[in-house]
Image (cartoon, rainbow, N blue to C red; front, side, top):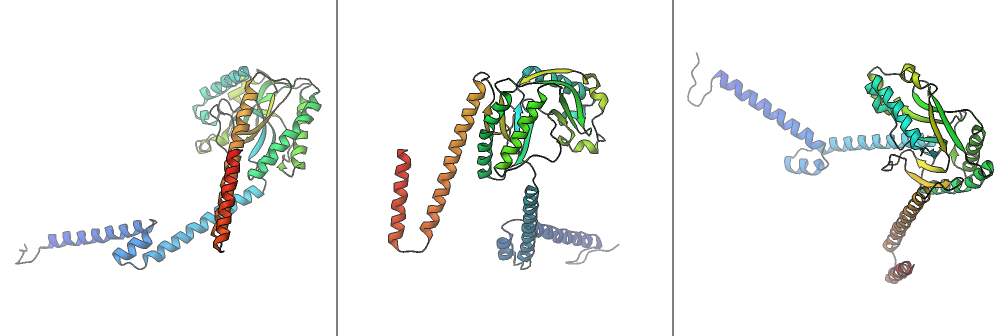
Length: 348
């Protein structure tokens, strides 16, 4: 058995010291690695610790991250250029009886498979899609609004003062992936198809990328498996027909078409669950005061947003002009012009 001499240590103590050193070195290495990922690493690490290779590592990681971001942006732009729709024309379903019957259908399916609850469309979002399109910026959105307004007289000409009523009956799917309530056969089909065709023509004449290659089939979607991609990992790869077999011939009610909306697929939905709406046109007789009031609110909000946007753009332009090299008189002239513009705006 070894005895520690003066100032010496035994083998156990030596192992303890060795382990402490290893842990200390590992801790320092981890600390450096964590600092490299922080935005201030290029300053603090090199100045305080004297580690000259850390900034280079951080710079390489920053460049890699920047390249990845640029690559994502390019892919996103390419997807947009490929014609990925982000807006659509919607006929909202406002008949509460239809909504009630769809909820009964959804609940019947969920009782058979609880996992499908996440695949259901929410209340307030039920609609018929007339046309899909791609609007990439504010200018194109404004063009889309103009096209929607120009569509109204064509719709009125097609309907010739008659009310367009859409009856819904039965259930079907697209490839067992999208569940929808079917539009019943009848005289209402032709005018609806004519309106969809007029919409496509009107928007395309405005230079908007609108419409799909496949044949238009009006339908009322109530569930989509794509809303919950994790279902596939759980073994749910299709909507089993037995889930809705009792509703194959079920009558869901009728919707009187009174409005067509230009809606965004991507912007935040309204508090009632309906899509963000840029503008609307009222079809046929006015259905109470709600649609008109809602449209006025949307238009007022849009006017305010446009005014704020223009004011910001004007301020940025004036700031850039002010910072351009020149004599003091030009700067003073610009300030005077700006003050005059602000006074004019205040009077307006």
